[in-house]
Image (cartoon, rainbow, N blue to C red):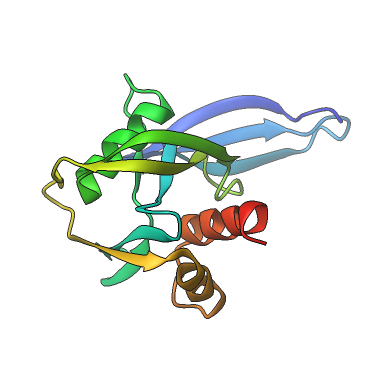
Length: 178
């Protein structure tokens, strides 16, 4: 299938974490024009940390966009000089204080391809060593431990509404905890 031709790209908004660009395209064959606004967001990671064979470490985090706390796995944006694996380790330490000795990549996904360029890498962390958390100044986070089976149930019951957290729990559960 032939892709539309990108004719133009204009910066609409430049923010702290993302930019918005308006793209103008022409359709193949018909020659019709159309525009789309794209949120250019860096790659990110989400980490499912196991504190033992059956228990995972989750966080309650305040999200300004919702003006409330939600339950999540540790996650964050990949810095320009980092690999996703390095980011997974850094974010886990920052948000929970635990450094993983073992990381397993579950895959990567595009959370919102209808308007965003973000790619989200999913990891499982094991063999955790506590070295102390390093929260960023805008983060309000409370880590807590729960059995994996309970976390999985929290997704099914609508207590976990964060997409990346739901995805990583369901994906891990479908692969390893049938």
